[in-house]
Image (cartoon, rainbow, N blue to C red; front, side, top):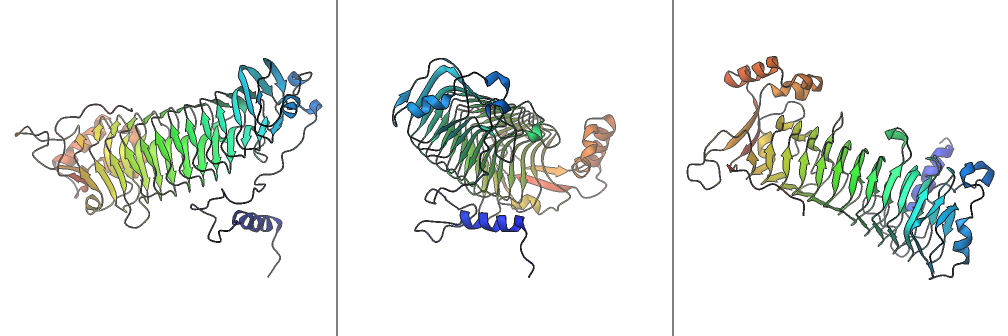
Length: 454
């Protein structure tokens, strides 16, 4: 066998390190991996050291903030005098740092501004700015490694990565305002990243003009009351189980919430609006299982919910209930025909296409997912006994709209007179047997009250 090259050796070494455990031989790399009891390991490249002359001139002459940290006793409260200080800073002891909103730490556009490598630390009221722009060394405003930390009410700007949590458990990230460097979307860093970090609370943060808020191999975290604007993924989960996303507002991002290779978790009481463009999607699934999507407002998106091979695990379901899908290009798009989606008590209104399957399927698709109690603004029936339920079953067929599902560029002509005429003729006298997309046996006749996140 030929010798392994350097990259292969590095990959084997990394996999071996991540598989380490203390007293638990069943710990494995993957969605179920938990490194909370593993030895602390160096999971990124060593942070480079930059001389003062290599940093931007604006930080020359500033007092190093590291001096104040070094002099503070462990467990003490550090309230620095207002002003601007030079970074970088490393914190390796329990400490409370309270800048009162009047303290700036600037690394002069090189490296990472602050490294928090301790537990039981509070970082509050600081402005962290001026990281480097290297993805290789994860240049960030705040690199966090400890547990039981509180990071709140900070301003994070002009940084590649914003707040970067690695192997961090039981911590809170609250009330921070995060903004990336002024780069093209794809080369920005993540505004907030969790990597093998569990049981954390991320709430009331503003992440604007960043790339993603992302959770890798991170379980049982809560994301609530956050605001995301003009980024790529508002939240992207990868091999991250049982995370809760609630009462957030996500506007003008490419994708609202994406569950990829996940199990469990819930997204509820969120507002996701204007996820547009070629990949515009409110909520997405990729080989995800056991997720609850409840009482969300998904409006003005290219696709409300996009699902690919989900639910993935046998005998699992995805529950979609109480949501409002309004004025989207497509309300729900299933790119596969696995079934297992229970769609109940939702509102579908103003969508160009309510529900569809990617590619041409068959009439058995309608039986694979369960539909009940939904309100459809294109329902053609009556409610003679006034019980709020339509007298006849609501069936949705694919007619001419199959053209722009199979040929997306044709969607531009969706409302043109020619396409409207073709759709009318297809419904009047179909050229071929149309596909039955769904059957709702108990459609709502009266639209329920507007879904309001609470």
